[in-house]
Length: 410
Image (cartoon, rainbow, N blue to C red; front, side):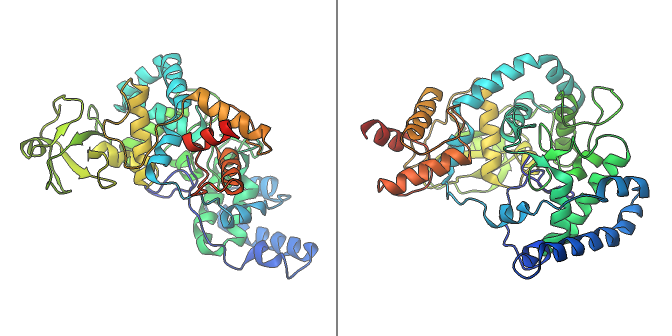
C-alpha cells in the first residue's frame, strides 16, 4: 500500500504535502553539509530516549541509528509529487488494466490454497485481496525493485527529523520500525519500501506490521516480504478488524436508477422498491443490508455501496482508489466492464495496445522505461511530454486511444 497509517488511516501513501521549512530541507541552502550532518547526529542522540522508552534497546538503537544517513531525497518526493490530474475514468482505466486482470487471475489460481485458507479464517473475498495485491505491488513484483523501493530507516529518519508538518507521525513510525527490528522480525537491509515507509506485498506501514501483522506461515516471524502468506492474511485481518468487513457480502453493485432517485442510504430491498436494479439483472442477495447510492459523475455509472466498500476504503481513504480496487476484483473474478460508461470516456487500451504505445513513444524519444503494458509515472511523464510537443490537449499524461492514434500517424 500507498505509506502512512495510524489507526484506520490508509496503509499506503499517496499524500501530496507542501514541505515547510525545517530539517535538511531548510538547511540545504543555509548551512554546510558538515553542519547539517552534525545537526542530524545530535537529533539522533536526542531521539534515543524516545525509542528506548518504547522498548527499543540501546544496543539495537546504536546498531540501527548510530551510522544512519538520512535519505533527504524524501523531501523532493513530498514536494514534487507528479500532478497528472486524472479524471475518474482515466484513474480507473489505468488501474483496472488488462495486465492486472490477467495477472490477477493467474495469481488467484496459483495461490488458490492460500486464498482458500484466508477466506475460511477471515471471510475476506479472495478477489478483493488479489486486487489490493495487484495495485499495491503488482502481485509482489515491485517489492524488491530498487526503482520503486528504498531502505525505509533512512527515509523515516529524514522525515522524523526534517518534515515538521507531520513530525509526530513520522517519529512514531520510525519507532515502530525500530521495534520490529528489536523483535527480530526484520533488519534494516531487508526493510525496503516506498519513500514514506510502506513495505511488502500489500505495502504495510510499520504500525500495521507491528500491530496487525500475523505469522500466517508459522515461520516464527511476521513478514510482509518473501512468500505472500503473512501479507495477504494480515491484510484480510486488517479489513476485518479496522474496516469491519462482512463475510459473504459483496462490496456493492453497479445499478440502474430511475430519474429523480437521489443519493441516500437505505436497504437493498428499499432500493429495489424505489426502482433501482443491478445492471446485470441479478437480485440483491442481502436485501436487508444497507447500501449507499453513489453517482460519481452526471450521466455516468451509478453504484450501490455496501459495508465492504467502506471496509476497503479504510485501506486508503480515497473513493477513487476504493472503486478501482473493487472493480478490479470483479474483473479478476470474471465480470465484464461497466455497463454504463463515464461521459467522455475512452475504452481501456488492451495490453498489446499499451505495449505498442510504449514502444512507439520510446522510439520517438520519449522514454517510458520499458514496454511491459503497465502505466506508471515514467510512461505518464513520457505521454505528457509527447502531448505538449504535439499540441494535444489536455496534456494530462493519459496513455489512451488519442495518444496511440497520434503516434501511429506521426
